[in-house]
Length: 102
Image (cartoon, rainbow, N blue to C red; front, side, top):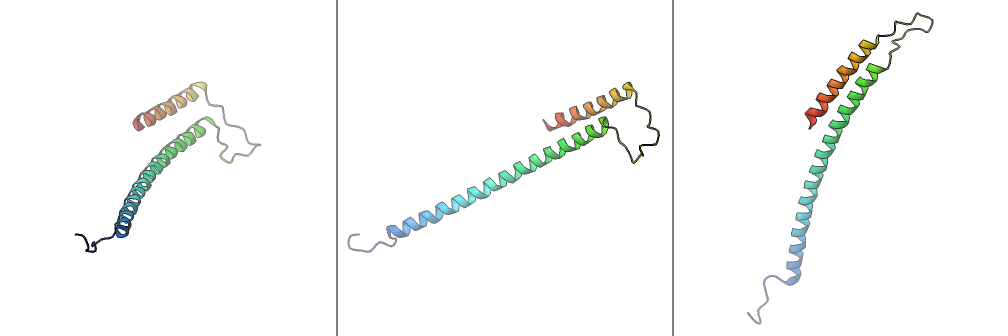
C-alpha cells in the first residue's frame, strides 16, 4: 500500500539472493570435488594395475642376478621355449586384466 514501509527492502532482497547463490555455488563445488576424488581414485587404480603389470613383465624378461658373484658359474640360459611360454603367460594375464577393466 502507498505510504507504508515495505517489510523487506530491495537491499535485503538482494542480500538474500546473494546468500542463496553462494549456497548453490558451495553445493556445486562440493559435488565437483567429490567427482574429482572419484576420478583420482580411478586413475590411481589404473596406475597401480599398470605398474604391477610392468613389474611382472620386467621380472619375466630381465634376468635376475639374485646376489650371484661374477666369478661364479653363470646359470644356464633358459630355452627359447620356456621364454615363449612365459611370454604367453604374461600376455594372457595382461589380456585378462585389460578385458576385465572394460
